[in-house]
Length: 328
Image (cartoon, rainbow, N blue to C red; front, side, top):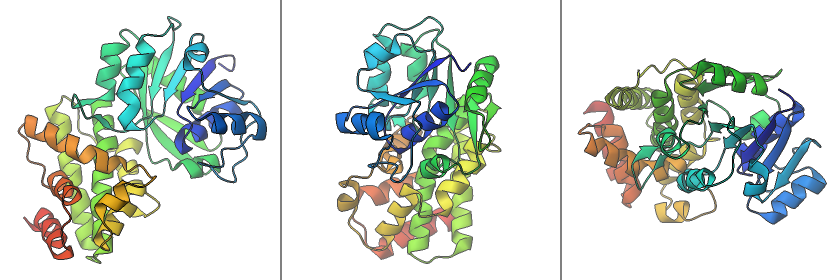
């Protein structure tokens, strides 16, 4: 499938890392970005210094800003944009000319805030009859760009399509594994960021590893409960499940973990969320809690993190909320 044309939408760190991985395998790969300076740098200097400093990109990687022009003959489209813009992008794509055989890979982790829907639901609504897969796993962009051995989950209702995606991604340092439970995979990709904020708070308050382990287990319960309510299997034994939860919760290299740590150390939430970094867990916490309320589910951890994020609580009040989640 080296003759396939692959579009990657989103020239941030993860989009660039995925596009570079594909281009190095000699696929015809075009990275779509909305920043003309980044696009020009990728095309002429073979780098993306804003998002992947010191990484040399494949000379086979092309970048462009004109999505409509590039997507019309694409065989595969990877969506790697922030969650806040994913729904609008899917709507935009649905209005463009596409090949009948064009398939989609969703790499965006989040929940559409307006409709409280996961993005696979929006793809099914807007890109009717198009095959798609969810890519989710313990994959820091910089490590994939640096060829660190990594595993990810490729979830799809169509196993043969998933196997095609696994094949085009597979290499000496990157492997995809098939999963048929797209509901659980999408929920994991959202809730693990909320759990990670909680773990960062635990570390910032120096509560210890026992508390953090108990917090993660509570988060896993909430994922399982929400998944089963929405028709998923709730099995977390996957790269997108345990693997991504472990990665995101165990280190301040994770943006969401670092957010929780900063909050626990007394930094102002509005200052943190108003900066240049995007914290997907902070965006998703409100939506997940609204969805939980709609489904009449009790999710103590998600509710506690949502409350902490929406209020400038004292350290004592934050501590009380975390202890209540763990002890009850």
